[in-house]
Every structure is written in structure tokens, then in C-alpha cells.
Image (cartoon, rainbow over all chains, first blue to last red; front, side, top):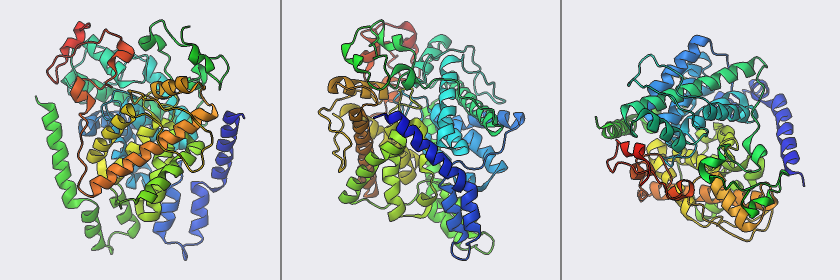
Length: 270
Length: 270
């Protein structure tokens, strides 16, 4: 059974259905039947379907989103920051579903999910932002590119208009994992967790991920977004980062070389 | 500067504000002014504020949510599964904001975030479910308990009504990380990634996290939810799991022993 092909076909078929009866289709159907459906009901029906409308951000708006994200880190930490930086401007530019969107719904994802140090919360917040605006399929492709950007860039890049601390250094995490990313940076900067420097650094990283996501969304809106990063579970035959030696040392388990079986995981060694 | 205290106070003040002007408050304000605000606008205003209304699930409904989660894994994978298992029933029981909620917004989080193997997607989906129903503060407390349950339990527990594969074994991940959780299970079961067994196992884990979250929400609705798991970033002075040796071997960096400085991270060793 080729499950991947089957799943891909499902996604494509869904894509076609959405093309015919997505936001625009639902709006058209419900506008003609307002005698039967209240406006509230019509709004509910369309809001449940992604993507929501998107309007390209100007360079100034992307920078503003970065500053909002940085400021909002100090309200509800990193995941909220990366998400709300985009949504606050979308409320002004687009309104509609963004006005009723509960921006705090991924706040718990801060600190690598409730402080457990796994996926950096900025990648959850920015992934939701990408998905709201571009739908789940493109949203995931954008999230994958943003994860790669996060793992391979010397961060933070953004310099906020109102920094709460001065910082000296940048670091490359080689990973989307909070513990590795903030740990490597704190070690290089010479500061501890919840120091003013660490908090400002994480606020800047939230801005970086929010802004990068908006840049990809702008490309997508122009028909110019091309996914370039191979999904890690396709490259390594298991959900994974590419920093194998960080945890495994030189004992990296070998995968099978044939996608979908991975039975050599059992053999260990390499 | 005691940032944690400052942040805690912020959260508490916000809690008070929400107590006065949350869902109920906004509804009261807007119901009196419908000449000025349309019903659509009133709905938007209240839907942006969490928590949304929650009604306790019966034992049968929790089981049904588990079966929906398991089935929905095969539509959009793990994060969607854990979230939609609860939301589909909340649409029927409560309606309102759940009807217009785009359940696919965290689908990208599958495979530990777009396949990067970090936070298990079931913990993102179930964390959103907890946050929608109980708000960001309690939602995070529930997410923390569910992360601990995930890391310390032999999973999967749930046996779906319609399994797509028979599986033999359970495993303890010691971690909320997809790569470790699914990797340890596959090794024990003797199967590869995207095997029918692995997919059914991950669908069952999605059901387990969805159901556990609903159990905590039920406790909370009864005023009986008590957070018991110390947030890891409080315990270890950095966002982290408690499986230090899994990656560090015996070279676990020492933290300072004083929360908020963590400068001994620089010293390495232990």
C-alpha cells in the first residue's frame, strides 16, 4: 500500500474541492440564501474553512509586525508573539475572520511547549499564521521553510525599535528545538535563562520568524513561493532534525535507504 | 528585577479583567447595544476572547472523541487528530465559536512540526483544545500535565473501535519529542516509519492525548483540576525535558541552583 501517494491524492482532491467551494464559493452560496441562513451562520461556515483572505504586507508592515511580535513576547511569550505580530496587522488590513480569532490559542507552546524545551514556540505561532493565510498544505510548506531558516541562521537578526536589553551575539541552533537554540545562545552570550538579554533575544527571534513567514506569504500571494527544503521525515525516514550527532554522537542509527520501511532502525550502529 | 513575579502579576491582572469582561461580560455589553453593534460584530468580539464555553463530556463522549481523533489521524495526521477529536463534539454540544473554528490550523505541527521530529503534534493539538476551552493560563497548566502524561506513560493506551492495524507493544518516551517517542516505539515493535502499525499507533496516541485533555477539562469544569507537574523550565532553569542523559550522556551541564541566572550553564560538566 503506497500510503504517501494515497495521502497526497487525498490532499489534492481536497485542494480541488476547496478551489470550487472555498471561501469564495461558500460566500457565493450563502449570499444568495440569506433568507435561510443568518449572516452570523454564513460567517461561521466560511471562517471554519482555510485559507482566510490574505493581502500582501508592505516592507513597512513587515517591520511593524516584527516590532509587534517583539513587544508581544513580553505579554505571552514566543508563540503568541510570532502569531500576533501578523494577526494584529491582518485585523487592520483584512478584518473579517482575523477580528474574531483568539490569538492566545497557542500561548501554551512557549518554551518549547509549556516549557518542555521541544519545538521553539515561534515556529508554532508562525506556522499557525502561515496556515490561516495560505491553508494547511501551503502553510506546512511555509512552516518547513521557516523551520529550516530557524535551524540554519545566525539568530536573532531583527533589531527592534524598542529593545528591552542590549545583546552582543548571535548563534546557529542547527535545530528547531528551544532547548538547543536558547541554550547555545545563552552559553555564547554568557547569560542565564530569564535574564533580560535572553528574553529580548527570544522576542527578536519571534520577530524573525513572524517576518520570514510574512515574506513567504507575500511570495505565495504572487505565485512565486517554491518549497525548497526537503521535509526531514522524507530525508531521514523518521521525523527528525538534521543535527543527528548533537544527541547520537557517532552512533547514528541507520535508516533503511528505502522510504517507508526504515527497518534498519532496529540494527543500531551506523 | 523579578521578571517571573512581574509576569505572574500581569497574568493575574489579566485574569481579573477577564473575570469582569470575558465572554459573559462582552455578551452582556453587546446584547444591550444591538442597535449599534450588529450580531456579527458582537460574535466577533466575544470569539476573540478565551476561554470559549465548555460543557463537560460524558465518558461515552470522551471515548467517541478518542475514536474521532484516531480516525482523523488518517486525514491530516496527529495534531489535527488530537484537536478535532474534541472540537467535533464541541460543535455538537456547544456550537457557537467551535462551528467557525478552522480545525486544520495546526495540521502543520504533525511529525514534531512539519516533520522535524520535535514536539509531538498531538501535544500541540491537545494544547490548543485545552486553551480554547479553559483559556491560556489553565490551558497551559493542562498542556503541562498532558506533556508529563505523554512522557511517562506506556503508550498507546486507547484501543479504537476501528483499528487500521494490529499492534503488539507499548513504549515510554521519557520525552514529549516525536522523534524519541515514535523512534523508541518503532524499535520495540519492529516496524518502520509510515508502516501501517506506526500510523495506527500514532492515531491511538492522538486519541490518548485528546481524551486525557478532556478529562482534565472535566476536572477543571468541576473546580477540581490541580496542576501537579512542576513546569520543566522552573525545575531545570531552562526549557527542557527531564531525560537529560538521552542526549547529554553523563555530561549534563549544571544549572546554577538559583532560578533566573543559570550561569553555570557556561561551566559544562557536572
